[in-house]
Length: 519
Image (cartoon, rainbow, N blue to C red; front, top):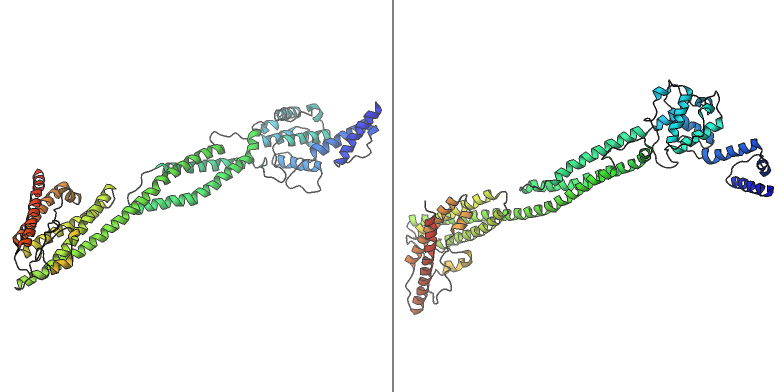
């Protein structure tokens, strides 16, 4: 019924007014009665408002109409094409070159502009409409309708606005890449991906190297280099990786549109995959590197302790030698020796220090410390000097020129009692037998001497010298021993003799061992 048709048209007109669409002299009865001029005008108004007016172009002014915005867009897109200048939506489009230029700007792989310049108007128009349709643009025009001196402006505007809607664009107020920038941005993206992936792979190989230097200085430098890499270079490369991801998001619309073809291995996911490999290798390297540094620092502390111990031992040996030389001077001048107990004390202390140093060196040997040979050389030199002084001491004080019958006790540090040795010489006035054989020095074993020697043969030779020195010391002590003046002292001497006898019997195994390595 007419009433219903009028009511329906009025609903549409009221909606357009709410959307601020200007309607001039158009009533519901004009449309209901089929007024062609007003009906076409209304349709054009609707198209202009809902399709063409929603256009955003960078550089536009606030008072530009939808038509002027679309014309500005067309001019920017076709700028640089020889012989093309877009000044209107009528005659400029009649030869089809403008349509092909717009498509070529967005998809240069689909349009050969050299052919466009030599083809006929109809061929250009047909080519542009077919390609645009494949790209999602509805074919609103026919070639024959446009191949005229002055095509219908509104029809051309409608079709060009359809192209604008279907093709990628920079969103209003957002980030995007225009058709004129896409090639430059694409080259930038590829270069960034190639550079970062190359850097990642190079450092992944470096991080996979788990062989670390034994030199503490080099190892510490390697660790500091790793920390600098982790705290400085990695954050910088993370920013580069994030920039690649953001740039890809802007280029993604062009990839989906078909303008760009993403090569294999250039997706941000590929970068992320290589990045993950690098991080895993870094974590594995740090897991091994940190304990290695801590271990080597502990070994360095022990090596410093050995260094200090050797210096201390050198001081004791120097004191022993100087004191021994003083007693030699006394003997030469016909005076009795005065510093026997002091020499014994110094040698005892040196022997105790050397035993501790040997234990520390063995620990460094077990850990393959890088400067082990240098430390062993120092200890061997000190050991040789100690043996030499011990023999000199034995020879000097066996002559019988003593200030008192004090002991040449080269025992282990646990038996050391310096003041007691100076005031109460060994076995003098003893009432009860000693609780142990502390006055009998236990000779060093062959294994101990090999451990501090440069070779096994040298250690075996030093072992023979050690046994000879021990025999001489025991012989001298036995020569100087007393019989006792009463029953308790005799019993004490008897107990000492039993202990000496036990030690001598135990010596037989060491002599057999020395014979095994003879020659």
